[in-house]
Length: 335
Image (cartoon, rainbow, N blue to C red; front, side, top):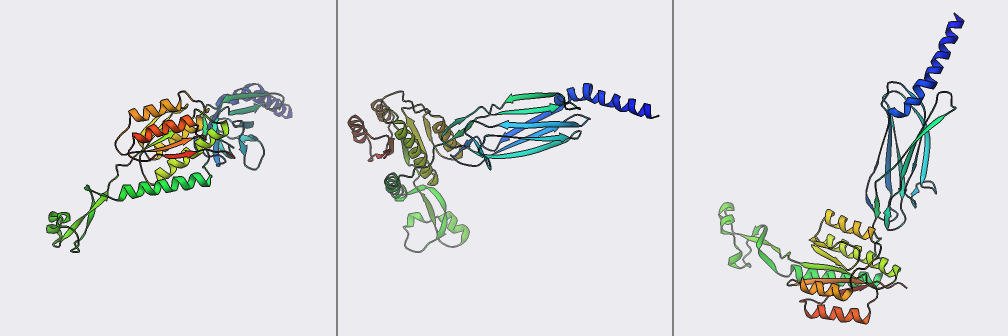
């Protein structure tokens, strides 16, 4: 009887060693996700990984490791990689999250994961490795230059005054009681008949604000160009806060954007800024020529540039002569 038991145990071990263990990795499924594809410098990003055993037999030993993009720092460590060991019952899974940060603007790739499975006796192992194709783009940080912020703040205040100074009679936002001070043309006779009292229209203010953000990448040092990107981000955030549509035009390696605002519009532009390698393809003078050709009535211009050269100022002067408003010029000076 003892002999039968021993033979049975040996047979079971041999089956686990040579039949089950070599096939266990084929039944493991690895899933992953990042909680964002666009982040700020230093923002906490969550990486979630899940290892599933789709087999009817347990996986006795597995080791899971992930190497995040170079430059990433996992919370609580000084490393961009992490690993742990586990075992999985049949049709069970284990989930783990890693919180990490990326230090500066750019596109981060090159993450990989590794799944190791061992044999029953611990003599051999098999490693499956795969590259993670997802990219994470880090946008420029916010501009902290007080002079730039003050100049922009004053300009945005002027825009707000011009934007709300005249009511648009076409856009009715609601009704209010007639006080006797409003002109007769503002009385809504239809609404008055419905309510049984005199009411007047509440008109919205004109929203046809026409702004183009121009980025010059022709001149300047890398540091000055980096700061220019930071200024563009700050400008766009201010416009988003006021829900003012804005166009984006550049002579650098960024895609021009039609007028718009909102999460999708802002996110696409920030992704472009994060990907920029600070190249310039045409001159600033040629960029101004393009703006003059495409100018519209009452268009406002916000020009962001490294310190302007004499030629740049001449080009801005040409744009000013063709514009209805004084351009706002924000220079990225690095002390």
